[in-house]
Amino acid sequence: MKQRMKPSHIGRFHFDPLLVVLTSSLLLIGFVMVVSSSLHLGAKMAGNDVFHYPIKQLIHLGLGFVFGAIITRVPIIAWEKSGQWLFIIGLILLIIVLIPGLGVKVNGSVRWLSIGGMRIQVSELVKFFAVIYMAGYVTRHQKSIRESALGLFKPLILFAIASMLLLLEPDFGSAVVILIIAMGIMFLAGARLSQFIMLLSFVAVLAVLLVYFEPYRMKRVTSFMNPWADPKDTGYQLVHALISFGRGEWTGVGLGSGIQKLFYLPEAHTDFLFSVIGEELGLLGVLTIIALFSALVWRTFQIAMAAEKAGERFSAFLAYGLGIWFGFQSFVNMGVNMGILPTKGLTLPLMSYGGGSMMIMFCAVALLFRVQSEVAEISANMPKERSRWVNV
Image 1: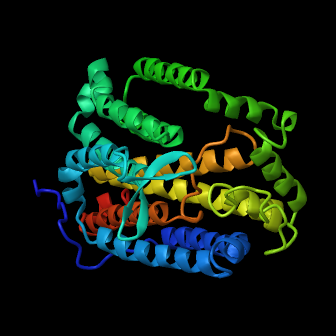
Image 2: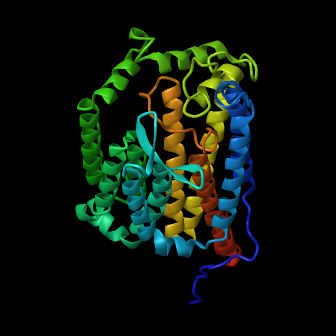
Image 3: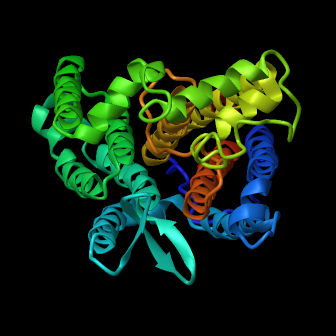
């Protein structure tokens, strides 16, 4: 039997047109909305330079594109071999960021490292490494995950350590994201439903306890349940986010004409960018963004299923993990903005202002492009009767 080709390099890169359109649309709309929501901030906080934040975001996009281009040239097999070491590096960085004098403190949280004058949010890097590590783990131990509880719990030791380090920053939202990524990949790898439900229940109980015994988290939950009870303090963010959506109605008040972003809505260009979209572009804009993210997750899972059919299990779980990450983080961000979920400091992928988060998202998308390209190459070299089942 002829051995299946496992490409270490690709002569011609197979770009996925739909993936290009979806990611480009999110990036373009995101940049336009960042410009709209940050011009006044530059005028007041950056020496009357209204283009301070847009120019910095352009730099972030440019650097992200460069890093993404590099990622697309790295064979998937290299990521598979280095996954464990990358996650350990992520854990080391989480420790370094907690060392006084090394980590950068912003709004009461120590989540950033300053490298070359640019702040890198370590948790975003850990999410990226978490996807690669878990994809490798379930590829190596898929039988163990399906047949024993030990196979299910073993990889969570490292994730528990990472979560504890994230909680010390504190960054509860990112801890939840990496656990969802890990459990989602294991579930798709065939973990027994009964064991998975037990694990999910344990994590849910632990999350409830972490909220209950931490006053500031408990305050966020109670303010989320009734933000109008204290609209000038604990419910301030959510109240103004809801006002944004209410003012937007069907088609919005017009690009650049929003009022809530003008020092009423905190973090309008980062965590609450979706609320600005709701006010200025209305329900039409909101549904467009939801549709784009839904299509992105759908396409990501299509690529994962094609990789699975081609026998590329690591590539499949890698794409599944990226899809879970994109889908869950965007859902949480939009849910927070719309008052469906308690306030969490998670950005809107590919859209919110930020250096580290934007560059890591570029890397994640580039990795997805690499998976799709290698699967397309394998499909092109398969006999016709087989390749038609692996088309992506």
